[in-house]
Amino acid sequence: MSKTEPTPSNAPVKTYRCPRCGKPTVWADNPTKPFCSARCKLIDLGAWANEDYKVGAEDTPFSDELDAFK
Image (cartoon, rainbow, N blue to C red; front, side, top):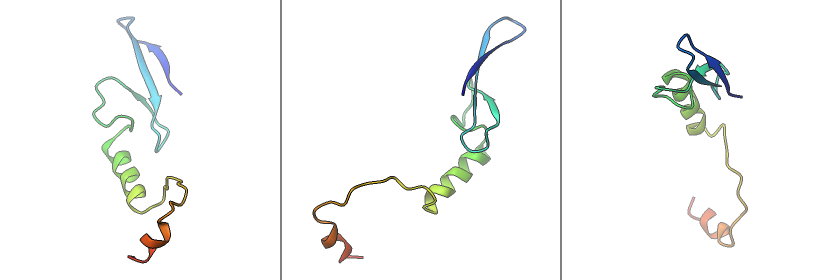
């Protein structure tokens, strides 16, 4: 997933793959972590808003009562 690549100054640079597009990206000074760009960040946010991703959960004892309010 991530690897260290030497730079001309011999300081290691931590890289990782963007979870949206898979593009290798440098971790340091990246304002859109863990994404490679604002575009990938917004695409991922849109997918959550569109309910493309879901977090699994068990039904609660009162889930039937909550469904009545929908």
